[in-house]
Amino acid sequence: MIENLKCPNCGGPLDTAKTEGNIAVCPWCGNKLLLSGLSTGKQDKKKDEEEDDDEDFQLQYYRPQLTVEQFEAKCQYLFDNDPLLPDDIFREINFKEIKRVFLPTWVFRGKAKGSINWYEHDKFERRAVDEYFVFRTVANRTSSGFVPDDLIKASKAFELNFATDPETMWCDEFCEEYLSSVDFELDDTMSNLNNQHRLFRESMNDLYIRSANIGQSAKAIACNVEYKFDEEFDEVEDTEYVPFYIIGFNYKGQDYHLMSEAVKGWWFSYHLPEDKQRKKILEGVEFPNWAVILLMVIYIGPPLLWIFGPLKFTTLLWLAIPAFIIIPIICWIATEKAKEKKKAIIENAKKARKQ
Image (cartoon, rainbow, N blue to C red; front, side, top):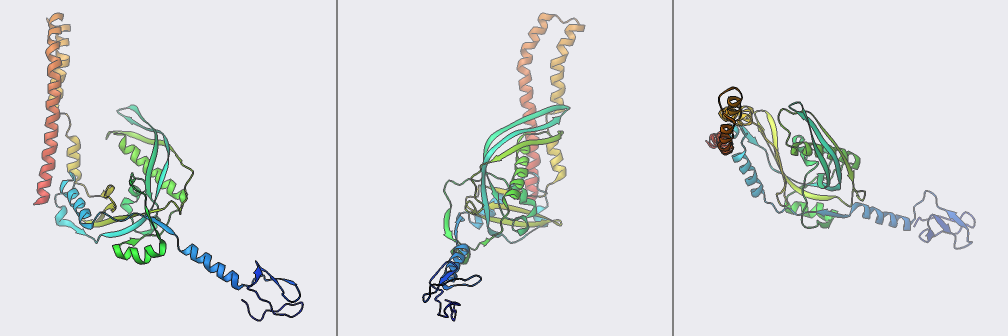
């Protein structure tokens, strides 16, 4: 109630607690007075209630179930078994502290339709895309600093759909009590929907290109896929906070990171250094040259002898029978030899890292 407010018509005191909106009615003469720019007790109370409602809301989240020790074990397994890690990784590496943070995520649903096009060995290749997608995206602002730069693209589109619905908690309780009880931080920054759709498309394009099994010699790779998102989506109500573990390390002056969701540990992304020379060797271990030459002799030799030499056609047919048996055997032996060579290179690298 605003005190000492009087009716300009009769001079009687006005009770502003008993108003209709911004209109006060004088109880003495019935005159109506517009309370423009003035606050009444009722209005102040209503405003306070609205502000309280705005500040506190039901937040959706998933509880962390993956322990720090389990996350470290996942990282250790990767370091022990990755075929391209440098041999001196454990001598040169400097780990940083593990970050534990709840990140806002959205689940995008919709239709992806188009194709991946490229040229390989002067031949046009195409892979059609026509599917319904359900992918999760980390919806924070990239400038928040929680997600490392080298993992931002991977975090903008990934498959992670839990079997259960998220839990709910009042935001104040979540921030003031729950976060400290699980020793996690909260990234409460939020990207806008249009920008998130753009980042999502870029990441999905990369996923489709990687899944197309495009060869090393491919050129003019293009992803012509259109994404039609389901219309029913609310940037606030559909936000689900998911816990993540993030660890970084420095190797020879460059920063690298590993990141895993901390609910089930199903999604695990990383950026690691590579031994470029070993990568080149492994990519070059293919069908052995001796097998290629032998197959050419079997395929071309008898027909040439039949055309230019004394070999009879009936003899050529008889030679074709063992050829059909020998050729698969040669291919199998050659493939196994290539696998053994790759395995030996990888095992030697693992031994070097353990030493």
